[in-house]
Image (cartoon, rainbow, N blue to C red; front, side):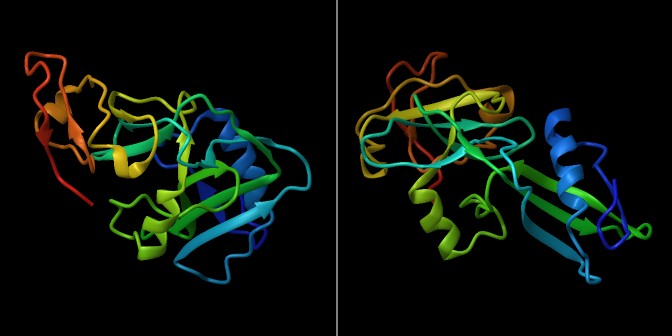
Length: 197
């Protein structure tokens, strides 16, 4: 794939993007002019419906669960019983390679630009505000373990807990919920406070 300005774009060797998303991102790249930038984050309107955006705005009535996605050391916020929203936008994040005259895909998705997750090194106060009112659709991405559920609001996460299944990586301490956890493997109902935002 190539940018409109002619530079080659490659997917990462350890990419977590599915083939359908790669096709959409390839098309979006054809609309991007690099301008010599080291890091490119572009929202591209492809002029037609290209699929479902899996990041949606939530409210206090939504049910939220935190889950760890494969390859991530911390938890992502998901909303239950919601559907994606049709979108004509694709977001592409690229980084210029140190090894040659090309860019590689950092990540990308169907839907408008979103902020880094609150635990990300690049998260700003605006990112934290964004994720207070947004979540990914439960079931839209693979997860390797899941977290506690809130039936009402972010503020109530500590009062209405479900059980979680922790993967081996999480049991070793690579966890980041802003909540308490109850494990399925022998701690039976003990609430264990972990790291906060």
